[in-house]
Image (cartoon, rainbow, N blue to C red):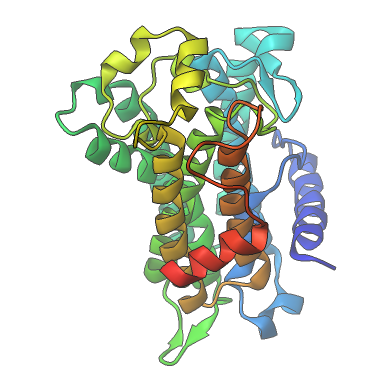
Amino acid sequence: MTDAELVREALGRRAAAAARIGISVPPAKGQLLRPLAALSFVSAEKRDALDERFWFGCLAIQMAHEASLQHDDMLDGGRGRRNAATLLAREGPGAALLRGDLYLTGSYRAARMAGSEGFLDDFIRAVESTVQGERMQAEIEAAADLGAAYEVVVRAKSGSLFGAATALPGWTGDSVRDGAGSLSPEALREVGIELGAFYQLVDDFLDYCPAADTGKPKLLDFGNRTWTSVLGARGRGWFDRTPDEAATEFFRAGSGRRSMADQAMERLEERGAALLERLRRAGAGRELIGIVGGWIDRCDGASRSGGGAGAVAGRPRGSANGTMARIASRA
């Protein structure tokens, strides 16, 4: 059984148990990345004996994430996700808001069922930080240094729940070990925050890549006038373009100038190499390391496809092995 299969099966059983006591539980859809990240830091000898505490902790984190998706759709006007119409699109804002609130409030009950005061406190702080990240992103235009401000945003908005997930095995006594013993929740949390921040940067990049199937409409950030790190040194004037102009400019290169996509991809590769090395040092499982490598390779493929009409100038087509070789070299 793969990690993904184990997570889906185990969450399904705990979700059914939670539903029996009246908790509104979302279906186990999507990639379940946060529970997968938690499982990745469970020591090999503990995997077959994971008890209810660990899995209810995973369920709480997944529920909070699903709640955040409903609220994100409300804030961004999201009409499509996971290649399907969102609840907002199908039933309107009232239904989306209520569903998000039910998942969020229910997640606290699930977190308590994990039976760890340390995890419960960690989880509450992570949810609060996620909401604070959303607020900070809405106010980012006032920042003098957009790049630095956005780094704070992604660590809060996207990194916090990943951090709570990777810390979970430390709270339940199931974590991987290094030379000094089991890794602490604090050490694991920091790895998770960086993992979640990188995941957001990948999502930001793919939002500008028409050739990448992400299950949702493209240029959402541009349409909402949301500054993300893919813009590099470009400021608020970037949004004076039309969407077609923005998509074209993102991949345009020439006269000795590399495209925005090329520059953003280089930054992603460098950060991804550092993250992969950090995951290995922390003892992450192979499946999670492979997932992160897949994110990088997916961005590389999207950057080469440009607007969908061939290779980007300055970035010759290469193979997945070539991409990973460059990442290994940087690491």
